Figure 1 (cartoon, one colour):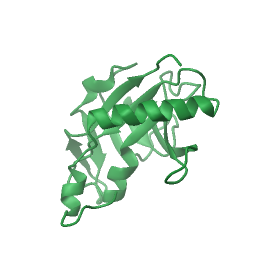
Figure 2 (cartoon, rainbow, N blue to C red):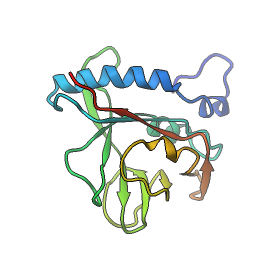
Figure 3 (cartoon, rainbow, N blue to C red):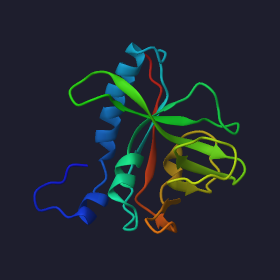
Figure 4 (tube, helix red, strand yellow):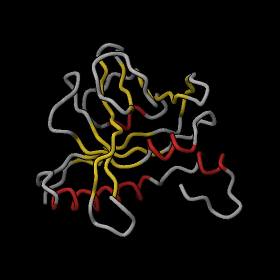
Length: 167
């Protein structure tokens, strides 16, 4: 995340992307994903927040953003993969190795780099048992892995349903 002049790293961590900004970004990404063959109505979620003081700057920027629903479920539930522009100023979208998925082994939703069905190391987790959006009910129910490997409750982390809209 770029830091504004005079901003502290702590201020960057607790200044989440506004929900409206996330929704606007979702609409732009949806159009680009359609162009790249993701179907006419790609289902998207957005993540904002990540204000835990124990989280690294890298962690906060990795968790925030737009995620597209993958074609196959993981653990019998939807699995979402992060997407972002290939580079600044380009209209090409690439998938990133960060996922929101249900881990049946631990009975938790996780955000991590491998959507597998065994207890794995992840960046964030929630034991809130939601099956489909609306995911906004999960706000305040996420824990973030801190730099020392422990877990901090993160009331700022929020998953937003960006839905699937007609082309």
